[in-house]
Image 1 (cartoon, rainbow over the protein chains, first blue to last red):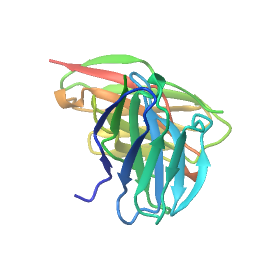
Image 2 (cartoon, chains in turn green, purple):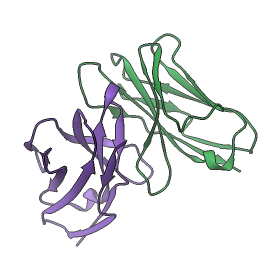
Image 3 (cartoon, rainbow over the protein chains, first blue to last red):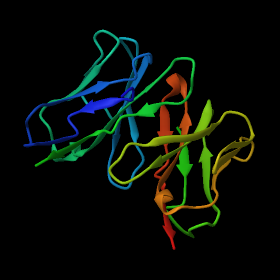
Image 4 (spheres, rainbow over the protein chains, first blue to last red):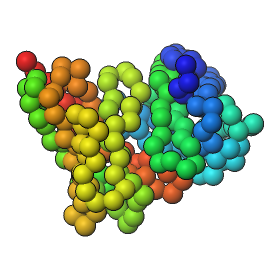
Length: 113
Length: 109
């Protein structure tokens, strides 16, 4: 499978706990994006990387959120001290620098109880 | 900022043609994208327009008019499996996507 893969697919956590999600992009893609989607809404941009450099972060990304892409391959998104409002689908996408279209992974559905 | 508007819901008949409109207000963008998303699944890329005009890809076509701030997605020969949410999105710096809220299409017999 050469698509974007995300792990885990589902995560249930208690409020206040930390969670970490992983994204493995399409291997030759040097751009990687994180989005968040809530029910009935389109995905909202959170942050993106070009290779290992984090080039932009949305205002939506509070201090509790941190993302890394240490070797320019896979990426992790960590949420500290989760809140119920963090419950959403977290989507990862990747693209090639020379092309506009991005390809999405299946997402990680987070439920904070 | 960018403001993107799409109808919330549409219903169409199997075998028919449906047009999903998208209007936007923005100071600039690289391209306009259309994605399909089935419930609980990832968005799947359908089509994009950089220049004005029509792009055709099989049963799906997308049109863009930059001067009018308008795009549409045309789906022909509708099938039941086309029931999904259709997302209009603009690309900006870094090719990050700004999405509309999506149009939920229901295809009926």
